[in-house]
Length: 259
Length: 266
Image (tube, rainbow over all chains, first blue to last red):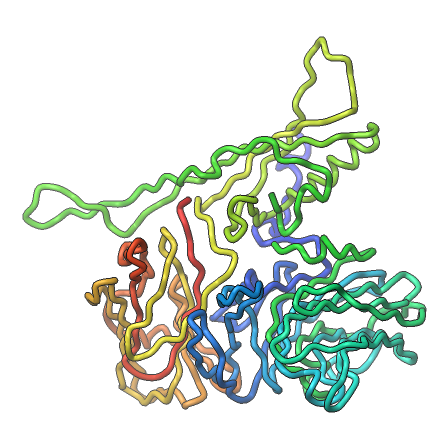
């Protein structure tokens, strides 16, 4: 008799898109389950979407606009490489779209990236949130990217251990229609370096003071796009392309590579 | 060559051999006997052979420890389902898995060296197709809207809204580039059922699901709304790529969009 009799077991995940990222949401490759109403990322996270109203003027590949109905994700095609062609597939949001992915991420040194086209978050309400790792009520230890001002804010990265928050606030801001890459390094000492590149330009950055990691992130935390919680907190409004979180130090070149 | 978004050059590996990348998958079709004619014609049922792509990688080394680390890294990159892109077609991806790595053996007369290593494996694409990296979204209307496809049929999801009263039939029509209606799919709200103006249907063309989504996000299987006609298949046979004329979709009423991805045999 041979041992083991059936050979080493294979993970069923071998049949699903894989990534070694902590979190990887690329709307081009997300699995949209029309039956279940879920969206599954290449990293395996399953998200749910909510919007309790319609969203008008969403553009298709030909530039024709349509109105997304309540609860319908607004897939919109935009020009990302600045050649005048709407080639890039992404998720357009308004002021009431929420997309949340429950996850059990552990506090650790990590790097992240979010790509989007500015549609008005930085000229909207202070605190408008692009991305967050927070509890349902928007609180608790975690991190979030929001805006600093009411009418002319800057994007800022906030990392909180629960009782103390460190913030890195950028000194420049995009205008509506700009292609924005925000990426960051949350170092092992809890210091955050937050970068912004607008329309492919040279990145600028800000760094926060250090702050020791908590033992865990807040219980029942979800990675949330366009919001900080399920009901509270201002929503951003943007055209999102993708989000990545990877363990370890930031490598700006590799984190921007696409699948 | 990128594997799951990672350029292998970033790990020091260089792709030195690739075969089968531009070899179309073999398709076997079922047949249907024709009435009054002595013979058969291909029908819509088909199977596709898997496509294999042998690849070779090379990497310079500095030590045996470096070699081990490089092999571990490469094996990690080749784990699970892969989305592979090549430099000459960066807008396309192939979904495949990799066979175990084989390190090219040293010749007997060769003095052992750790200066470089060459490994081989085979990428296996089970559906034989390559896909656009970017999906397409098109707003549909009561007039024909062109749906450009690749060289293979595509699936897609039709989202169809607008107030829809009970027993009312609506149609989704696929026309070829010449305007001939090739498929008309009729969807009817059964007696006692309807859509509010903020509800919508999602029709998964590939998996053949019909799902009703209410404004509260409640989803129910409504396959029985599909009442007559053939199921819509987005088939490039109905387009004329050289003339940039494509098959079209139209709806008889309401508002709708389709999200799909172009697929290619090569």
